[in-house]
Length: 106
Image (cartoon, rainbow, N blue to C red; front, top):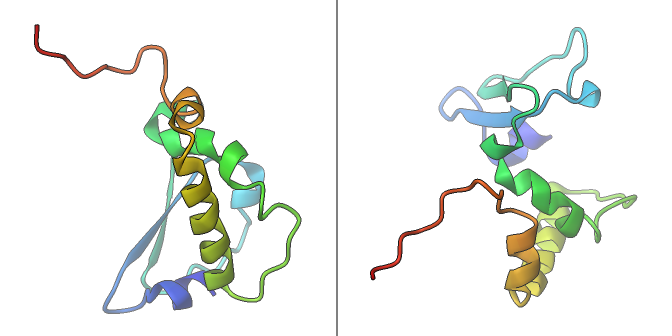
């Protein structure tokens, strides 16, 4: 369903980035044409800082059933708009203490 709604196929390739969680793998999994699975190395959250935002973003979709991918997208987009008004909360959940900070002119 994901591949179909994303338009993946012989003429368009989609890449799905996954961490190493056990539920992201299945022996004998059929991956549709045009969809490539790329697994992140273990213990590398800095490669996907958005991973830390899930605890904030997934609140309106947890334990919900959706008939279409577009319904989930709409719900997440609304949650992102709501969080936009809380930049300090977003910053606290995505910046790493060692993350390079922009240089400010003296």
